[in-house]
Length: 205
Length: 243
Image 1 (tube, rainbow over the protein chains, first blue to last red):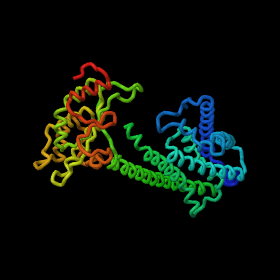
Image 2: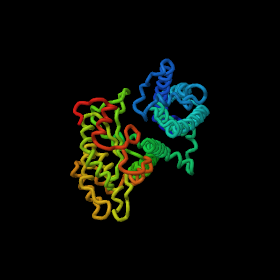
Image 3: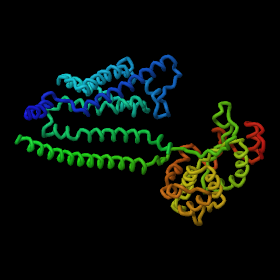
Image 4: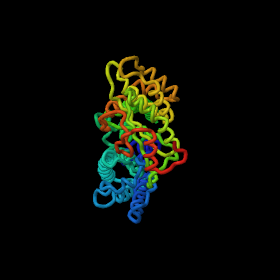
């Protein structure tokens, strides 16, 4: 009786690639935030279509302005507003988060699929960051929520999918330092924003 | 049963290990982040929008009641004055027109754009033209009222174009202080933040001589203050309190 639980607690998490509580909540939170941002963007986009003079709730100043961002070609790369993609993708993330929090066992291939999808999303997000900063020259707060959510989500989902292969070597180091990398990524993006719009920020001081 | 305590112990060791690793990780990451932030801030702040030659900034002086165009944004009468702090004709111009221009500004009839131009730089005057012009922009950054006093003081104590002593940066800073400009002004004058812009101002604004006076962007041949007032009346109409 005393041995059995021991064995179980030692083996089962590895076996079912158990999703840690924190990871599960992380996925759920990313899903909620991302979906909220994508939904708001979609609603604002519809408002703009109804009334072109509508000023979105997130157009705060010349730099923080989603109105000017949402009406660019980059905001509808695939011929329809990007936020529709966000609604679909973050709904999947949200549902996955709920299942993970509820401790439903999902097969590894599912997590791998989600990781691949999130990786594609991350590539897209980086393209959008570049466009927003250096081509459009404005920041859209709701879009930035999506940027901020996608990167940690990729890290969480990828580490769930790859949990078994986190030994030594480069992969292990990468895994161990993943949150440091995320912190550095956030720092880099924030600094790029700071430098890019310095002329504007400095007038606020 | 014999196994269990051992396992427990190794687990605890691992936990302590992990905790230490975590702290190291957080520490190293914070160091890198702070370093990156400090480096970028340093670069951004030290190169803080130092205007280059070719940029043409002016100091706009107007009263809050200045008569506006129909669009309600731009003043109806903008007098642009291009002056070198050292040129004798500018000194004469200020002597003759300064009081009238000030009255026109204060009465709300006109807005004035002062362009400080450094065209008489030489080794002999330690580039006084551009240094004093740049200093005027430094003062204007702090307060336009201080700029008006500083600008007046520059011409009231104008050094001779040919020989004599030329105010050093320290003396310019003192003049600025007397004009009521403090804050970042001493540093700005000392570092010559606007000096390059001032020395490139003549080329940037396409003027050939100082003083050059333009009314709403068009060259104006000034003659007497009375003629200028008449011109203002022609464009703006009668404004109470006009000289």
